[in-house]
Amino acid sequence: MSQVPNTDEIKKGLAGVVVDYTAISKVNPDSNSLLYRGYPVQELAARCSVEEVAYLLWHGDLPTPEQLADFERRERAGRSLDPLLKHVVDELPAGTHPMDVCRTAASVHGARHPKAEDSSREANLEKALELFAAMPAVVAYDQRRRRGQEPVEPRDDLGYAANFLWMAFGEEAAPEVLHAFEVSMILYAEHSFNASTFTARVVTSTLSDLHSAVTAAIGALKGPLHGGANEAVMETFEKIGIRADETHEQAKARAKAWMDAALAEKKKIMGFGHRVYKHGDSRVPTMKAALDDLIAFYGRPEILGLYDGLEQAMDEAKGIKPNLDYPTGPAYHLMGFDIPTFTPLFVASRIVGWTAHVIEQLENNSLIRPLSAYNGPDERHLD
Image 1 (cartoon, rainbow, N blue to C red):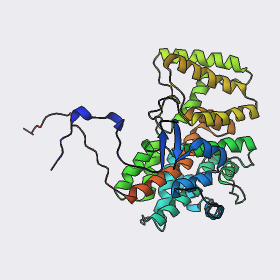
Image 2 (image 1 turned 90 degrees about the vertical axis):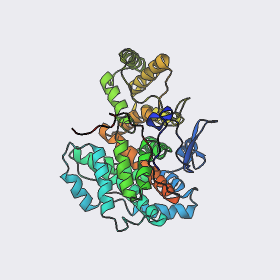
Image 3 (image 1 turned 90 degrees about the horizontal axis):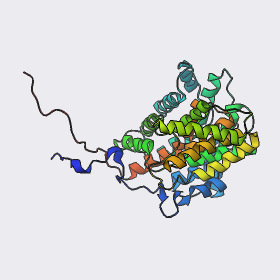
Image 4 (image 1 turned 120 degrees about the vertical axis):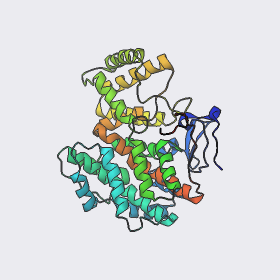
């Protein structure tokens, strides 16, 4: 029997709709903290590696030293860029958006995987770890090829974050840079039923494979209303103008004036507001502290001035707080990443969350198929 939707209950964008259970993450309304398997993410970012957090999200608990050593060994064994995958990337136009490169890479990785159609928990954990290990090589290689640089081979004596930076820039990162990067990877790893994660769960609910779900999730993350926001933040900084000779106060004044004018013209400014957080994104203080360390390390007070000016103007005019993308954009800029690479960095981290949700969806699966309220022409017939 077909269901007739109640049009009085339509929730555009599924706002406020609870569609399923998850044990992976939640925002604790009492503390306003994002919890990964019960742990506040700010505590994990302060005390854990990316590898430990990935293990936690996939397995439910932090690893023992023995489990971590085995996990790291398997991750490091999968870091090299597949020659066929490199060939596919090389065949893409030079102007291809890096997110399209990531999407293509995930699809190729899945099409060639010997367990592509095996959706058992064990096979999906294996495929998830392999994607997690391989994506940094894709992101780093694509940035270097667009710059006309030779690829840098991975190292198995470095942790996940340190090796990622090594492949991207061909040199070992300073401690301040490595810390900020690792923090960003942990903060981006998971965030409940966001748009890309829900996309992955929808695909999984059809009993499609893990790589198809991740490929679809990358497509969702590409949009500026989701993952692309960190790129938009830095583009805003560039529109205002980054002047290395400015003081903090000079840059802040210019940024505040720019924001006041933009808001008066009702322009949408990315990097502010979040559907889940009503009192500010709980991840921002941790990432902002890492950004502050980078600004001090590089001696770039004008970046902080732009940051503070935009934030103050938005708060005074709208009372809207920054989200995680706001401090992450300038942090990635200071590290040396190209703006189009910012969201692929998000991909490399969020692979962990997506695949954790793929596995969870399959454990108690139900096809995700909502109803719609039709508002087109009434029934009509050909003459």
